Image (tube, rainbow, N blue to C red; front, side, top):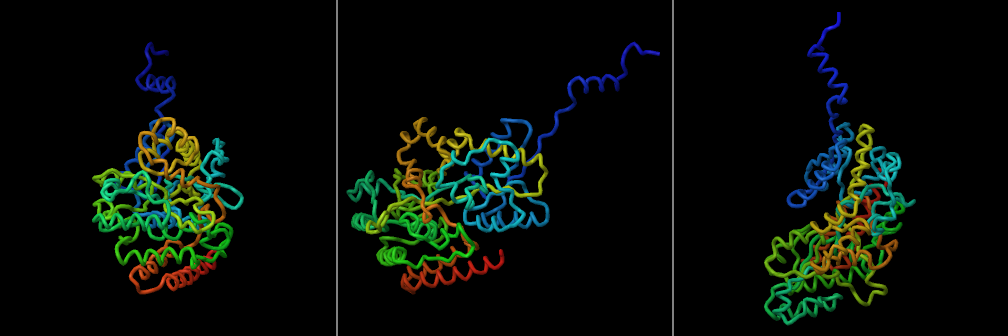
Length: 439
Protein backbone atom coordinates (compact mmCIF):
# COMPACT_ATOMS: atom_id res chain seq x y z
CA UNK A 1 0.00 0.00 0.00
CA UNK A 2 1.42 3.36 -1.00
CA UNK A 3 0.97 6.25 1.37
CA UNK A 4 -0.25 9.47 -0.27
CA UNK A 5 2.27 11.51 1.72
CA UNK A 6 5.77 10.54 2.98
CA UNK A 7 6.23 10.03 6.69
CA UNK A 8 8.20 12.61 8.69
CA UNK A 9 11.23 10.30 8.78
CA UNK A 10 11.09 9.75 5.01
CA UNK A 11 10.78 13.48 4.44
CA UNK A 12 13.82 14.15 6.60
CA UNK A 13 15.85 11.49 4.74
CA UNK A 14 14.79 12.94 1.40
CA UNK A 15 15.87 16.41 2.52
CA UNK A 16 19.27 15.12 3.64
CA UNK A 17 19.83 13.39 0.31
CA UNK A 18 18.69 16.44 -1.62
CA UNK A 19 20.99 18.86 0.17
CA UNK A 20 23.99 16.58 0.70
CA UNK A 21 23.58 16.31 4.47
CA UNK A 22 24.80 18.69 7.16
CA UNK A 23 27.99 20.63 6.47
CA UNK A 24 31.10 18.71 7.49
CA UNK A 25 32.99 20.21 10.39
CA UNK A 26 36.22 21.98 9.48
CA UNK A 27 39.43 20.08 10.25
CA UNK A 28 41.09 21.74 13.24
CA UNK A 29 44.83 22.47 13.13
CA UNK A 30 46.51 23.40 16.40
CA UNK A 31 49.23 26.05 16.20
CA UNK A 32 51.29 26.46 19.37
CA UNK A 33 52.98 29.84 19.61
CA UNK A 34 54.90 32.18 21.92
CA UNK A 35 53.36 35.56 21.15
CA UNK A 36 51.42 37.50 23.77
CA UNK A 37 50.05 41.04 23.92
CA UNK A 38 49.69 43.11 20.73
CA UNK A 39 51.79 40.69 18.64
CA UNK A 40 49.66 37.79 19.84
CA UNK A 41 46.57 39.68 18.71
CA UNK A 42 48.10 40.19 15.26
CA UNK A 43 48.94 36.47 15.06
CA UNK A 44 45.38 35.54 15.98
CA UNK A 45 44.08 37.85 13.24
CA UNK A 46 46.22 36.06 10.64
CA UNK A 47 44.71 32.74 11.72
CA UNK A 48 41.18 34.19 11.76
CA UNK A 49 41.64 35.61 8.26
CA UNK A 50 42.72 32.20 6.95
CA UNK A 51 39.74 30.56 8.64
CA UNK A 52 37.37 33.10 7.10
CA UNK A 53 38.89 32.63 3.62
CA UNK A 54 37.88 28.95 3.37
CA UNK A 55 35.67 26.43 5.18
CA UNK A 56 37.69 23.18 5.12
CA UNK A 57 40.23 23.97 7.82
CA UNK A 58 40.34 25.90 11.07
CA UNK A 59 43.71 26.98 12.46
CA UNK A 60 43.53 27.25 16.25
CA UNK A 61 46.33 29.37 17.80
CA UNK A 62 47.32 28.31 21.33
CA UNK A 63 49.67 30.49 23.40
CA UNK A 64 52.22 28.29 25.21
CA UNK A 65 54.43 30.81 27.01
CA UNK A 66 57.94 31.97 26.14
CA UNK A 67 59.90 30.68 23.17
CA UNK A 68 61.88 28.13 25.24
CA UNK A 69 58.68 26.99 26.99
CA UNK A 70 56.85 26.59 23.69
CA UNK A 71 59.65 24.56 22.08
CA UNK A 72 60.30 22.27 25.03
CA UNK A 73 56.56 21.85 25.57
CA UNK A 74 56.04 20.79 21.96
CA UNK A 75 58.90 18.27 22.12
CA UNK A 76 57.48 16.78 25.34
CA UNK A 77 54.01 16.68 23.79
CA UNK A 78 55.41 14.89 20.74
CA UNK A 79 56.84 12.16 22.94
CA UNK A 80 53.43 11.82 24.61
CA UNK A 81 51.69 11.86 21.20
CA UNK A 82 49.67 14.91 22.21
CA UNK A 83 51.42 17.47 20.02
CA UNK A 84 50.12 20.12 17.62
CA UNK A 85 50.62 20.10 13.85
CA UNK A 86 52.43 23.49 13.94
CA UNK A 87 54.78 24.95 16.54
CA UNK A 88 56.49 28.34 16.49
CA UNK A 89 60.19 27.96 17.38
CA UNK A 90 62.69 30.81 17.81
CA UNK A 91 65.66 30.90 15.46
CA UNK A 92 68.17 29.66 18.05
CA UNK A 93 66.11 26.49 18.45
CA UNK A 94 66.71 25.49 14.82
CA UNK A 95 69.54 23.05 15.58
CA UNK A 96 67.49 21.46 18.37
CA UNK A 97 64.52 20.95 16.05
CA UNK A 98 66.72 19.50 13.32
CA UNK A 99 68.19 17.08 15.85
CA UNK A 100 64.72 15.90 16.99
CA UNK A 101 64.90 12.83 14.78
CA UNK A 102 61.56 11.64 13.44
CA UNK A 103 59.67 14.59 14.89
CA UNK A 104 59.91 17.13 12.09
CA UNK A 105 57.98 17.08 8.80
CA UNK A 106 60.18 19.35 6.59
CA UNK A 107 58.21 22.13 4.93
CA UNK A 108 59.60 21.47 1.44
CA UNK A 109 58.42 17.85 1.74
CA UNK A 110 55.04 18.84 3.18
CA UNK A 111 54.33 21.22 0.31
CA UNK A 112 55.37 18.63 -2.29
CA UNK A 113 53.25 15.91 -0.68
CA UNK A 114 50.23 18.22 -0.60
CA UNK A 115 50.85 19.29 -4.23
CA UNK A 116 50.81 22.90 -3.00
CA UNK A 117 52.71 25.43 -5.17
CA UNK A 118 55.98 26.29 -3.45
CA UNK A 119 59.01 28.12 -4.81
CA UNK A 120 61.81 28.86 -2.30
CA UNK A 121 63.21 31.53 -4.64
CA UNK A 122 60.25 33.81 -3.87
CA UNK A 123 61.47 34.19 -0.27
CA UNK A 124 64.22 36.54 0.91
CA UNK A 125 67.46 34.50 0.96
CA UNK A 126 68.73 36.27 4.08
CA UNK A 127 65.63 34.93 5.84
CA UNK A 128 65.31 31.45 4.38
CA UNK A 129 69.04 30.69 4.70
CA UNK A 130 68.54 30.31 8.43
CA UNK A 131 65.99 27.53 7.97
CA UNK A 132 67.49 25.74 4.96
CA UNK A 133 69.59 22.58 4.92
CA UNK A 134 72.89 22.11 3.08
CA UNK A 135 71.00 21.00 -0.06
CA UNK A 136 68.92 24.18 -0.15
CA UNK A 137 65.70 22.62 1.18
CA UNK A 138 63.52 24.76 3.47
CA UNK A 139 62.90 22.86 6.71
CA UNK A 140 60.51 25.29 8.37
CA UNK A 141 58.33 28.18 7.26
CA UNK A 142 59.72 31.64 8.14
CA UNK A 143 57.06 33.60 9.99
CA UNK A 144 58.20 36.40 12.27
CA UNK A 145 61.68 37.45 11.23
CA UNK A 146 63.35 40.58 12.58
CA UNK A 147 66.80 42.14 12.64
CA UNK A 148 68.42 44.76 14.91
CA UNK A 149 68.25 48.39 13.81
CA UNK A 150 69.19 51.73 15.38
CA UNK A 151 66.33 53.74 16.94
CA UNK A 152 66.87 57.48 17.39
CA UNK A 153 65.16 60.08 19.58
CA UNK A 154 64.83 62.96 17.10
CA UNK A 155 64.03 65.54 19.77
CA UNK A 156 67.18 64.82 21.78
CA UNK A 157 69.23 64.99 18.59
CA UNK A 158 67.80 68.44 17.85
CA UNK A 159 68.53 69.51 21.43
CA UNK A 160 72.19 68.57 20.89
CA UNK A 161 72.33 70.35 17.54
CA UNK A 162 72.54 67.05 15.64
CA UNK A 163 70.70 66.11 12.48
CA UNK A 164 68.49 63.08 13.17
CA UNK A 165 68.25 62.52 9.42
CA UNK A 166 72.00 61.75 9.51
CA UNK A 167 72.49 59.48 12.52
CA UNK A 168 75.82 57.75 13.16
CA UNK A 169 76.87 55.23 10.53
CA UNK A 170 80.05 54.04 12.27
CA UNK A 171 81.03 53.36 15.88
CA UNK A 172 83.49 56.29 15.98
CA UNK A 173 80.60 58.54 14.86
CA UNK A 174 78.45 56.93 17.56
CA UNK A 175 81.02 57.98 20.15
CA UNK A 176 81.39 61.50 18.71
CA UNK A 177 77.64 62.17 18.55
CA UNK A 178 77.14 60.49 21.91
CA UNK A 179 79.50 62.96 23.59
CA UNK A 180 77.60 65.87 22.03
CA UNK A 181 74.33 64.44 23.32
CA UNK A 182 75.77 64.14 26.82
CA UNK A 183 77.14 67.68 26.63
CA UNK A 184 73.58 68.79 25.90
CA UNK A 185 72.38 67.14 29.09
CA UNK A 186 71.30 63.69 27.84
CA UNK A 187 72.35 61.16 30.53
CA UNK A 188 73.04 58.26 28.17
CA UNK A 189 73.84 58.20 24.47
CA UNK A 190 72.72 54.65 23.65
CA UNK A 191 71.65 51.29 25.01
CA UNK A 192 70.88 47.91 23.46
CA UNK A 193 68.37 45.10 23.51
CA UNK A 194 69.36 41.40 23.29
CA UNK A 195 73.09 41.79 24.10
CA UNK A 196 74.42 38.62 22.43
CA UNK A 197 72.17 38.88 19.37
CA UNK A 198 73.27 42.48 18.76
CA UNK A 199 76.85 42.59 20.04
CA UNK A 200 78.16 39.18 18.94
CA UNK A 201 75.87 37.48 16.44
CA UNK A 202 74.87 40.48 14.31
CA UNK A 203 78.12 42.32 14.98
CA UNK A 204 79.94 39.38 13.39
CA UNK A 205 77.62 39.04 10.38
CA UNK A 206 77.64 42.84 9.84
CA UNK A 207 81.46 42.68 9.62
CA UNK A 208 81.50 39.43 7.61
CA UNK A 209 83.47 37.47 10.19
CA UNK A 210 82.56 33.96 11.41
CA UNK A 211 81.00 33.21 14.77
CA UNK A 212 82.05 29.59 14.45
CA UNK A 213 83.57 26.99 12.15
CA UNK A 214 81.58 24.84 9.70
CA UNK A 215 79.73 27.85 8.21
CA UNK A 216 78.59 29.05 11.64
CA UNK A 217 77.37 25.54 12.43
CA UNK A 218 75.23 25.23 9.30
CA UNK A 219 77.43 22.54 7.74
CA UNK A 220 78.13 20.26 10.69
CA UNK A 221 77.52 19.55 14.37
CA UNK A 222 81.31 19.53 14.83
CA UNK A 223 81.34 23.35 14.76
CA UNK A 224 83.41 25.36 17.25
CA UNK A 225 82.83 28.95 18.37
CA UNK A 226 85.26 31.60 17.11
CA UNK A 227 84.01 34.66 18.96
CA UNK A 228 87.35 35.40 20.67
CA UNK A 229 88.63 37.46 17.75
CA UNK A 230 89.99 41.02 17.35
CA UNK A 231 86.74 42.55 16.02
CA UNK A 232 84.48 41.35 18.84
CA UNK A 233 87.22 42.03 21.41
CA UNK A 234 87.63 45.61 20.19
CA UNK A 235 83.85 46.11 20.30
CA UNK A 236 83.43 44.74 23.83
CA UNK A 237 86.38 46.79 25.07
CA UNK A 238 84.78 49.93 23.62
CA UNK A 239 81.43 49.15 25.27
CA UNK A 240 83.17 48.65 28.62
CA UNK A 241 85.03 51.95 28.25
CA UNK A 242 81.86 53.82 27.26
CA UNK A 243 79.93 52.25 30.15
CA UNK A 244 82.16 54.16 32.59
CA UNK A 245 80.66 57.50 31.51
CA UNK A 246 77.25 56.13 30.44
CA UNK A 247 77.97 56.95 26.82
CA UNK A 248 76.71 53.38 26.59
CA UNK A 249 74.41 52.21 29.37
CA UNK A 250 73.65 48.51 29.75
CA UNK A 251 70.02 47.80 30.55
CA UNK A 252 69.95 44.02 30.86
CA UNK A 253 69.15 41.00 28.75
CA UNK A 254 66.38 40.51 26.20
CA UNK A 255 64.43 43.78 25.95
CA UNK A 256 64.94 45.01 29.51
CA UNK A 257 66.78 48.14 28.30
CA UNK A 258 63.68 49.48 26.55
CA UNK A 259 62.56 51.88 29.33
CA UNK A 260 65.89 53.72 29.06
CA UNK A 261 64.98 54.67 25.48
CA UNK A 262 61.22 55.13 26.03
CA UNK A 263 61.76 57.66 28.82
CA UNK A 264 64.43 59.67 26.98
CA UNK A 265 67.18 58.61 29.37
CA UNK A 266 69.12 57.26 26.36
CA UNK A 267 68.99 59.02 22.99
CA UNK A 268 69.50 55.87 20.91
CA UNK A 269 68.86 52.18 21.18
CA UNK A 270 69.83 49.19 19.05
CA UNK A 271 66.89 46.82 19.10
CA UNK A 272 64.74 44.50 17.08
CA UNK A 273 62.93 45.91 14.07
CA UNK A 274 59.90 44.11 15.50
CA UNK A 275 60.06 46.42 18.55
CA UNK A 276 58.77 49.27 16.36
CA UNK A 277 55.15 48.88 17.47
CA UNK A 278 56.20 48.90 21.12
CA UNK A 279 58.53 51.88 20.59
CA UNK A 280 55.82 53.92 18.91
CA UNK A 281 53.31 53.01 21.63
CA UNK A 282 55.64 54.01 24.48
CA UNK A 283 57.86 56.81 23.16
CA UNK A 284 56.50 60.35 23.56
CA UNK A 285 58.81 61.74 20.88
CA UNK A 286 59.49 61.46 17.16
CA UNK A 287 61.42 58.29 16.37
CA UNK A 288 64.00 57.84 13.62
CA UNK A 289 65.42 54.60 12.20
CA UNK A 290 68.85 53.75 10.85
CA UNK A 291 71.15 50.83 10.16
CA UNK A 292 73.45 49.49 12.87
CA UNK A 293 76.85 51.21 13.15
CA UNK A 294 79.98 49.39 11.96
CA UNK A 295 83.72 49.57 12.58
CA UNK A 296 85.10 51.29 9.43
CA UNK A 297 88.55 49.71 9.59
CA UNK A 298 87.08 46.21 9.03
CA UNK A 299 87.44 45.45 5.33
CA UNK A 300 84.13 44.89 3.54
CA UNK A 301 81.94 46.20 6.35
CA UNK A 302 79.05 46.57 6.43
CA UNK A 303 77.91 43.22 4.99
CA UNK A 304 74.33 42.23 5.92
CA UNK A 305 72.61 41.61 9.22
CA UNK A 306 71.00 38.33 10.26
CA UNK A 307 67.57 37.56 11.59
CA UNK A 308 65.99 36.84 14.91
CA UNK A 309 62.40 35.86 15.51
CA UNK A 310 60.93 32.47 14.75
CA UNK A 311 59.69 30.06 12.12
CA UNK A 312 56.88 27.51 11.97
CA UNK A 313 57.82 23.84 12.27
CA UNK A 314 55.50 20.99 11.33
CA UNK A 315 55.50 17.88 13.52
CA UNK A 316 54.96 14.32 12.31
CA UNK A 317 52.22 12.12 13.70
CA UNK A 318 49.07 14.09 12.93
CA UNK A 319 46.25 12.96 10.59
CA UNK A 320 46.97 13.43 6.89
CA UNK A 321 44.01 15.76 6.46
CA UNK A 322 45.60 18.21 8.91
CA UNK A 323 48.75 18.35 6.80
CA UNK A 324 46.78 19.30 3.69
CA UNK A 325 45.39 22.18 5.72
CA UNK A 326 48.82 23.17 7.04
CA UNK A 327 50.14 23.36 3.46
CA UNK A 328 47.22 25.59 2.44
CA UNK A 329 47.79 27.76 5.51
CA UNK A 330 51.46 28.20 4.62
CA UNK A 331 50.48 29.21 1.08
CA UNK A 332 48.08 31.74 2.61
CA UNK A 333 50.82 33.10 4.91
CA UNK A 334 53.08 33.61 1.88
CA UNK A 335 50.58 35.70 -0.07
CA UNK A 336 51.99 39.20 -0.72
CA UNK A 337 48.97 40.94 0.79
CA UNK A 338 49.12 38.83 3.98
CA UNK A 339 52.87 39.31 4.40
CA UNK A 340 52.64 43.04 3.64
CA UNK A 341 49.97 43.46 6.32
CA UNK A 342 52.02 41.48 8.86
CA UNK A 343 55.18 43.46 8.05
CA UNK A 344 53.49 46.85 8.18
CA UNK A 345 51.63 46.20 11.42
CA UNK A 346 54.38 44.49 13.43
CA UNK A 347 57.81 45.63 12.18
CA UNK A 348 58.76 42.07 11.24
CA UNK A 349 60.35 41.56 7.86
CA UNK A 350 58.24 40.50 4.90
CA UNK A 351 59.43 36.99 4.05
CA UNK A 352 58.88 37.42 0.30
CA UNK A 353 60.19 39.91 -2.24
CA UNK A 354 56.63 40.41 -3.52
CA UNK A 355 55.42 41.56 -0.09
CA UNK A 356 58.22 44.12 0.09
CA UNK A 357 57.39 45.40 -3.40
CA UNK A 358 53.69 45.57 -2.50
CA UNK A 359 54.44 47.58 0.64
CA UNK A 360 56.51 49.94 -1.47
CA UNK A 361 53.75 50.25 -4.10
CA UNK A 362 51.20 50.96 -1.36
CA UNK A 363 53.33 53.92 -0.28
CA UNK A 364 53.98 52.48 3.19
CA UNK A 365 57.69 53.42 3.29
CA UNK A 366 57.00 56.87 1.87
CA UNK A 367 54.38 57.53 4.55
CA UNK A 368 56.54 55.95 7.26
CA UNK A 369 60.15 56.96 6.52
CA UNK A 370 62.76 54.54 7.79
CA UNK A 371 60.49 51.52 8.11
CA UNK A 372 62.34 49.83 5.25
CA UNK A 373 65.71 50.04 7.06
CA UNK A 374 65.45 46.45 8.27
CA UNK A 375 64.95 45.09 4.75
CA UNK A 376 67.68 47.28 3.23
CA UNK A 377 70.07 46.17 5.96
CA UNK A 378 69.23 42.47 5.55
CA UNK A 379 69.64 42.62 1.79
CA UNK A 380 72.56 45.07 1.65
CA UNK A 381 74.83 42.40 0.17
CA UNK A 382 74.45 38.79 -0.90
CA UNK A 383 74.79 36.66 2.28
CA UNK A 384 78.10 34.85 2.80
CA UNK A 385 78.89 31.79 4.91
CA UNK A 386 79.57 34.30 7.71
CA UNK A 387 76.34 36.25 7.29
CA UNK A 388 73.56 33.83 6.36
CA UNK A 389 72.84 32.91 9.96
CA UNK A 390 74.00 30.41 12.54
CA UNK A 391 72.98 26.97 13.73
CA UNK A 392 74.47 25.94 17.06
CA UNK A 393 73.13 23.28 19.39
CA UNK A 394 72.26 24.41 22.94
CA UNK A 395 72.44 28.02 21.76
CA UNK A 396 69.94 29.24 24.35
CA UNK A 397 72.47 28.23 27.03
CA UNK A 398 75.40 29.54 24.97
CA UNK A 399 73.73 32.94 24.73
CA UNK A 400 73.46 32.98 28.52
CA UNK A 401 77.18 32.21 28.73
CA UNK A 402 78.06 35.03 26.30
CA UNK A 403 75.91 37.53 28.18
CA UNK A 404 77.34 36.51 31.56
CA UNK A 405 80.84 37.19 30.25
CA UNK A 406 79.81 40.50 28.63
CA UNK A 407 78.31 41.62 31.94
CA UNK A 408 81.59 40.84 33.71
CA UNK A 409 83.42 42.91 31.09
CA UNK A 410 81.06 45.86 31.50
CA UNK A 411 81.44 45.66 35.29
CA UNK A 412 85.23 45.89 34.94
CA UNK A 413 85.75 42.41 36.44
CA UNK A 414 87.26 40.91 33.27
CA UNK A 415 89.00 42.23 30.20
CA UNK A 416 87.17 41.77 26.91
CA UNK A 417 89.88 39.34 25.78
CA UNK A 418 89.60 37.15 28.88
CA UNK A 419 85.81 37.19 28.88
CA UNK A 420 85.57 36.18 25.23
CA UNK A 421 88.11 33.39 25.69
CA UNK A 422 86.06 32.01 28.59
CA UNK A 423 82.77 32.39 26.68
CA UNK A 424 84.27 30.55 23.71
CA UNK A 425 85.60 27.74 25.91
CA UNK A 426 82.35 27.30 27.85
CA UNK A 427 80.30 27.49 24.67
CA UNK A 428 82.42 24.85 22.95
CA UNK A 429 81.91 22.51 25.90
CA UNK A 430 78.15 22.83 25.37
CA UNK A 431 78.56 22.26 21.62
CA UNK A 432 80.52 19.03 22.18
CA UNK A 433 77.86 17.75 24.58
CA UNK A 434 75.14 18.52 22.02
CA UNK A 435 77.13 16.82 19.24
CA UNK A 436 77.67 13.72 21.37
CA UNK A 437 73.98 13.52 22.27
CA UNK A 438 72.88 13.79 18.64
CA UNK A 439 75.30 11.48 16.81
